[in-house]
Length: 207
Image 1: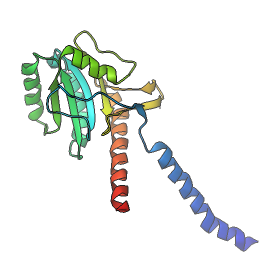
Image 2: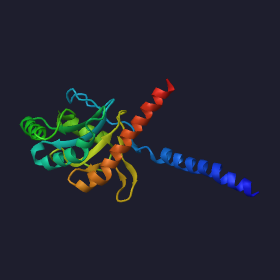
Image 3: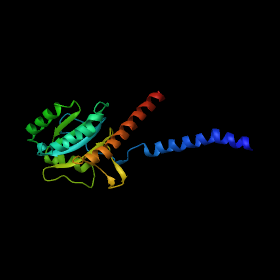
Image 4: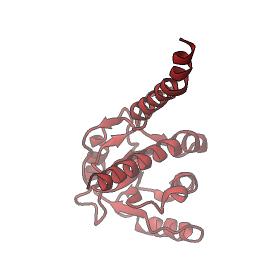
């Protein structure tokens, strides 16, 4: 009887522990899908959402006034992840803001490799339509901007949190808040990148 107990502890218990943690990875290893289909970028230039892991933001008619948000996002989210395949940051602006965008790009380029920063322009109707397709509880202001940025996966799905401790459903991340970017968004970007890496490894193993 004693021998059976010892064998159980040595061989069965580790298996149970492994299965527990493995189920945890399956349950919590994916970032929730909050919107099944976000609008595409047709009419916004040559950028695209399909096949890319995108951080999507809206700078509106006065991108220069949102410089702090852009720099926060650059330091806390873009720089740690920009070398990952298919990762990009897309900022949507309104027509007539080209000079402000160029100034932003020039300032970023002094201390950042900006190869995966994209600035795209659309009409007010296009910008509002794209934002509405996110289906969030947020809104653009009168300048067609918002401080919130959003995680869009390769299938053009909005990813976020469905049980955030502060907000419940968390559709976007406040780029004015270093804490929100650093403590929440960075973790969620890590999760979605890991999710795609695991899927890629599985596909290679299945071949």
